[in-house]
Length: 217
Image 1 (cartoon, helix red, strand yellow):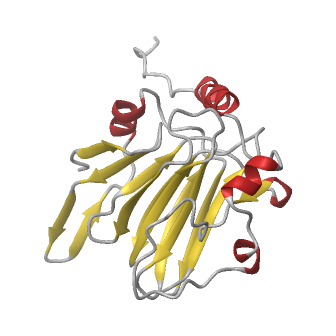
Image 2: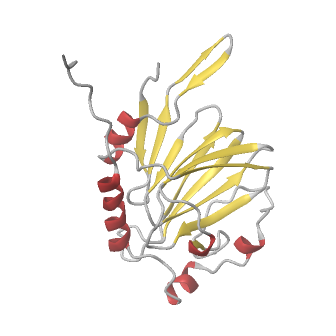
């Protein structure tokens, strides 16, 4: 039993929110945060071949991001909250994108089990709203430290919606991250054209499971 998903395009080109049906009963709840048919309906293609799955647990106030991966290879992501509550934020840092510099946010929690898909080159952050919040990520590329890039989540030019009453807890790397203007000036931002091409390459690398054929004699 999987049910259906509500699909919403976000303000960042190519980023999509998915909200699955949740099935409660006397034992608890059952939910499928990822469903291939819904993903195809939302994006026009199957999910990328998963190369790595990540799981983070954070306390209230932790802010992780804004993170993206250098191109090539770039990295697409599918993110949901397995436990707790977080504000998830996507920012378009792809130079030449029709939505360059725009952001959108989604409340991810273990009630709705919404998920967010980020195409290659879109920067990602989240603000943890409850202790012991667990975030799960499916990634199209393996983590390589040298390829990771950041933009400051506190950049006033972006004006991200950090919740009132939360003092951001940042890693040293995220606190020292450049503004989007600085990253643009030093050439560390990806281009929209290259990111779109890399997304298409992810589609090309996906190998569907063949339908079962008739039994051979």
